[in-house]
Amino acid sequence: MGSITFNHVFKRYKGESRPAVNDFHLSIEEGEFLVLVGPSGCGKSTTLRMLAGLEEISSGEMYMDDKFINYVSPKDRDIAMVFQNYALYPNLSVFENIALGLKLRKTAKHEIELRVKRVAKILEISHLLDRKPSQLSGGQKQRVALGRAIAREPQVFLMDEPLSNLDAKLRAQTRAEIIKLQSDLKRTMVYVTHDQVEAMTMGTRIVVMKDGLIQQVATPRKLYDEPINVFVAGFIGSPQMNFISGTIEREEGNFYFANKRMRLLLSDKYGSRFENSAKFIRNVIMGVRPEHVLLKANMPTDEQSSFVPASVQMTEATGADSYVYVLVGETRIIARTEPENEYGKDEQIAVGFQMNRLHFFDENTGIAVGGEEG
Ligand SMILES: Nc1ncnc2c1ncn2[C@@H]1O[C@H](COP(=O)(O)OP(=O)(O)OP(=O)(O)O)[C@@H](O)[C@H]1O
Ligand SMILES: [Mg+2]
Image 1 (cartoon, protein in one colour):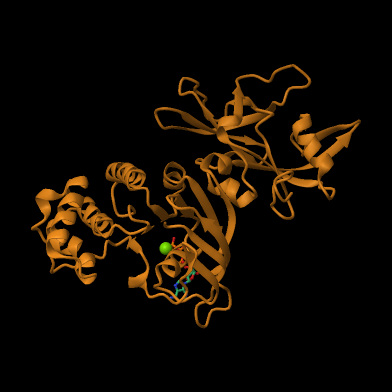
Image 2: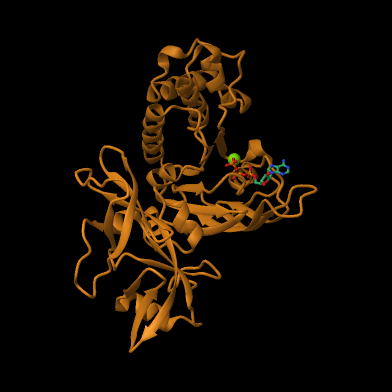
């Protein structure tokens, strides 16, 4: 129970020329924790609202457990939704807010009492049941909103940025609670966020969206290690992946990445991708994550080394690690280093790359070379 299928779903709002959701095509398994992530306006909420039945779809089909639900009214879908702004009723007590959905479904009074109390216990809000929403902190309101959804015991939970109004600590705590709840209840969860850290820590699968289009659907690990295009590569990971423009050159069976400042011999792993690519790709963007950038105080003398001269712009210390911003020509590169390594502003150093942790994207299409489509 609780599986969901989107079959080529489109949403075009009245008077808009471009669809807000463009050919959303995806199956969600029962019990899965699916996260929709992407920048503001990419269509996350619209997708969720269509699934909840709060927004008409323009074309395509939606199914829940193989049941066609396009025209099923929201209250008849076995779905509970938690909104960003909690949407609590100010005149109702916490108890009544949590009980409301059950009351509307004509649940027996003693059953309502039982469920509300059980949910309140799980969420540690038992002592707040008589209060009004105005007498609660943001985190408490959030838990009431969660409680209202949980009490209904739906097959599917939909959550739209439920943590965005909380401070960092409460957010981390509630995040952990939601993960635990979902794994205890084993219900399908579709969770929307624009926070990639939240997406990476919560989702068993992540859907990255941009301009209404699905960019990639994958596990957090795969998204991080094998982003399908420049957008996903830049969106997932913080600080973001470094991007360096250059060309691919072939010489005596070897492949090199080259630009004005560097000429790197590529391992066979990458060489074969260019060799097997359907078309000849010359202009590329090389991507490398900050943790795969190496810094040395001096240039190594070894000819095959991947190091190039750079100058230090600044260092950002987070406590656990330091991020060193360097310039190679005009290209800024961020490196993650141990906090013990200190570099002064304008210091001349050497920058290198873990040569088996590189990413290459076709400069024209942005698509990863040797990826599923490249
Ligand atoms: N009722 C509406 N009428 C017209 N256009 C709308 C309406 N609601 C949303 N849109 C547009 O549809 C697109 C997708 O909006 P949506 O709210 O789904 O984005 P989102 O990914 O949830 O963004 P955010 O992270 O800011 O919440 C946006 O361009 C938005 O302006
Ligand atoms: Mg939204």
